[in-house]
Length: 437
Image 1 (cartoon, rainbow, N blue to C red):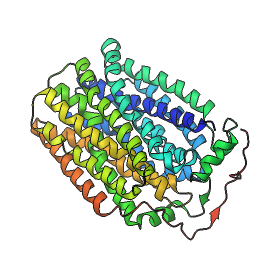
Image 2: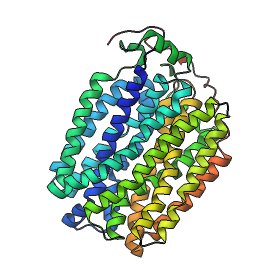
Image 3: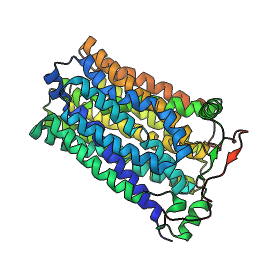
Image 4: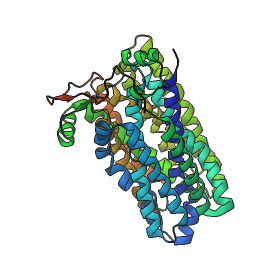
């Protein structure tokens, strides 16, 4: 049996790296942009959150579109949109156009993670799914580990516009590769019959769609306690994640008085540790424990709660002015948090009713990415009011405690939610047939 499914996972993982290069460039370039446009810390927070205005809002309709149209075409179009957004930022002459381009970037990148989760649900058997999702989700951390020093070098040499131009060109190359390579399982000629049958027998999600409209499906999902459990927990994780993603270089520059180049290297350390932790613990170890017979719900809840608990190490960074100590605490916090990310992203592929993986993933990523709006702005205005990051970090810790309680008491099990009473519409392509494209 060949392993073509893992080339799809690899393609998705590369896309995550490119995706996060496009997000990280703003936080690296911000000290120069702040100086050029004379921005206050509060205004910096608004700039850093602009991407999430459209990104978060679109998570709900994007999930429904994925369930109706499929991964291939939604992802193809979105990669082109985010490429245009990056290149537009590089040539922007004023702050208004920069904010517009970041909103456009959010529109382009909004479908990617729900599409990735849905693709894995269709391409990867249940027993390999945690490993597959950790493999691509960990790249969001590796991207920061690579991207922060690399973009810092580019920005130092060619200015902040050079950083956006470089990521724009990289995005264009990826869009071309994705367009050529990605297919749905039932239409991919490179997928051997034996592997296709293995994927189906392993519990892959079907290509069926529900007849209920988006509002009906969302209302049904929100009536389930365990949906709320993972929704709140994932949002709590998202607050700290987006605080680090948007403000870590600025924190090191302002609080620790580092140069742009030095912040790039120091910022890379927590992301490297986070990448390793997610692959080893959130992916390999989770699948290994379940393979040995441990209850999936129990394993997931243990990793989710312990991961968020380790995230409370951010409190240590709130009370130090030593850069090495601060980075050590942040590394521990980030390592714990990213393990929960891989686990939480896989949950919709287990509990979603037939035909609603995209909708449920969109709902969860909406809650998570709403924090991408709140965290940068709240952090910016807290720093502006107090002159310190201490209270910003303490607020993040308080939100993590809410997440721990949610995963502990609301996430009851990982059994599939019963399908609604809506009739199921069969896929236009029979799941037992393979057709070309």
